[in-house]
Amino acid sequence: MQQLVLDIVPTPPPRFDNFIPAANAELVQAVNAIATQQNPEPQLYLWGDSGSGKTHLLQASVHLALSRNNNAVYVDASELAAIDPSAFEFIAIDNVERLGAADQIKLFNLINHMREGHGRLIAAGLIAPMQLPLRSDLTTRLGWGLVYQIHPLSDADKLSVLSRHAQARGFELHAGVADYLMRHWRRDLPSLIAALDSLDHYSLQTRRPITVPLLKEVLG
Image (cartoon, rainbow, N blue to C red; front, side):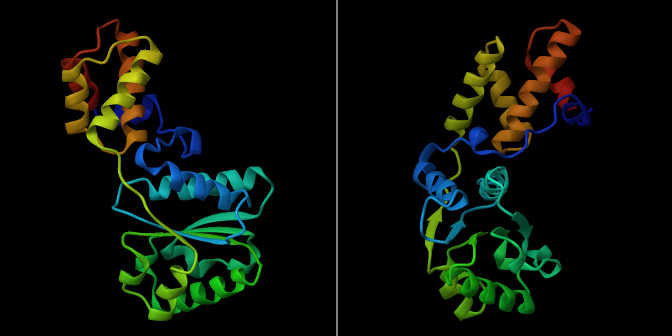
């Protein structure tokens, strides 16, 4: 039954307008400015725990750059070997702590290339640049530009967002339903919102009120 949630309402694509900044407002503004060339600094490094929103922001920044007719690409560290970085005006590289030896050299050269005025880069990892298990000359270069730590939303922040989202859809999200969803579904906000949308759709489809038993039925 768990697949029902994904079948009814897919997780929305990562965009700036569906990212909740909370304590990360300055960071979001900085990422946006790099993607839109509104900041002369060509490079930004973003770090934080898994699930904190790094990938969302990287993919949102690439979408924004593409919407402005820039040649832009999002790549996971495992995919860097398959592309020619010099072919892009804007690159977002995720999970840099996983870079192999050859790709570390590739990123080292890319940073040098971009800092000579040939494009922009946003990179992301789990930890701060100087703590990364990479070549020391690369970690130094990753720290040359803007560096931000992303702070995950608190449970209170997520509950507040979910409650407002439910009100916008025309129903009240009771505390017991919200608590069960937070404990038994994926913790990232886009997935929680998608689940809530699915629950609302299923409630209307079956003509049953939104309750914990109905949520259990949807989530399996």
